[in-house]
Length: 463
Image (tube, rainbow, N blue to C red):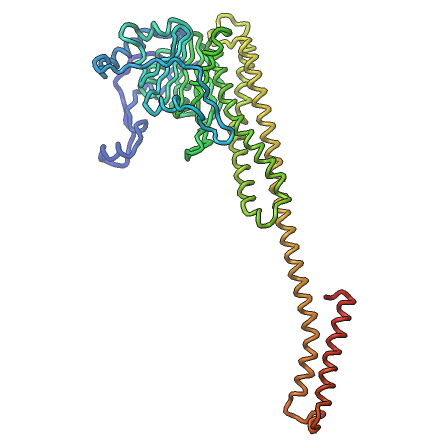
C-alpha cells in the first residue's frame, strides 16, 4: 500500500533537459511548471514503512510556521497587505436566460480581477475574508490555525501556486495523486474517497458570452474533510459567492457542514446550466416551427441557426453526461459510510437526500438535451428535405419551360424550311408571276400550319 511519507528533502534535485543551452531563453519560452526544480520526494510516491501510518489530523503547526515565513518574506505586516471582510450581502446575482452574465453586480468577478484569489469562510466568523494569498488571511492578533479551529471552515483558492499546493498537501495530508490531479487540472469528473477526505472533481463552464472561451469547461476541485472543505479552481467562477450568499440566507435553518458546502457548490453549478437549456428550448421550438413554413428568401440563416443550436446542445451534453455518475458515486459512498461513526469524510444522510435532488436535476437536464438534440436533428433533416423539394420543383419548372420551347421550335423549323426553299437562287413556283397570289398563298399556308400545330399541342397538353 502506498502512502504519503513526510520526510525532509535530501537536497537531490533535477532539472528537465532543454534543447537550448541558454537558460534565459529557455525560461522565457517554458512555463514555470516545466523548468522548476523538484525534489525526488515530490516526483516519487514512496511505500509506507511497516507499522507507520499517516495521521488524519491537520498539521496546524506546519500551517502557522509556513504563513509566518511568508509574512517575513513578503514583509506583509509592514506593507499592511491583509485581506478584507466581505459580509456577503443578500443581493441577487441572477443570470439572463440568453445573455448568461451578471445582470446587476460584478463583485465576484471584480474580486478576481483585483487579484483577491483566496477566500476564507467560517461558521464562527461574521463575514468572508478575501485575500491575495493565504498568508494574508489571518489578522495580526491571530493565527491561521486558530481560524481553522473555530468551526467548519471553507478555503477557496483560485490558481494555487506550487508552494501553496505543496504546503497545503503536507498540512492536510492530501494524497500525491490528488495533488497531481489538481495541479494538472484533471479534466475527468470523479469522486474519490481517501482515509481523511473525499475528493470531488466537478466541472463548470465559462458563463461570459463575450469571452472567446464561452462554454469552455472550468474544473472545480473539492476536498471534503471532517473539519472543513478546500476548493480549487483556475479561472473565475461565481459559484463560491452564490453558495456563501445562500448560506447566509439559510444559516438560521441549517447546520453548515463541509459536505453541505460541497452539495451547495454542486447544486449551484448544476443550476447554472438551466438558463442555457431554457434558451435552447426556445430556439429549438422556433426552428422546428419555422423550418417548413418560411419562404425561400427567409431561409438564408436557418442552416446557421440549426448548426449553432446543435453545437450548444452537444457542448452542454459533454459537460453534463459525466456529472450524474459523480453524484451517484457520492450518494453511494454516503450511504455506505453512514454507519461508520469514526469516519470524518462521511456524507450525512441529510446531504445524501440533497444530492439525490441534484441527481434528479441532472437527469432531467440530460433527458431534455437529448430530446432537443433529436428535434434539432429532425429539423435539420426537414430543412434539407425542404431544400431538396424546392430544388426538384425548380428543375421541374425548368424542364417544363424547355419542353415548351422545344415544341415551339418544332413549329418554327418547318416555317423556316418553306421560306428557305422559296428563297433559293433557283427557279421556284410563281417566280415569273407579277401579282401577289403566290405570296399570299404561302403566307396563309404557313400561318395555318402554325395555328394548327399550336392547337394540336394544346389539345394534347404538350404546351
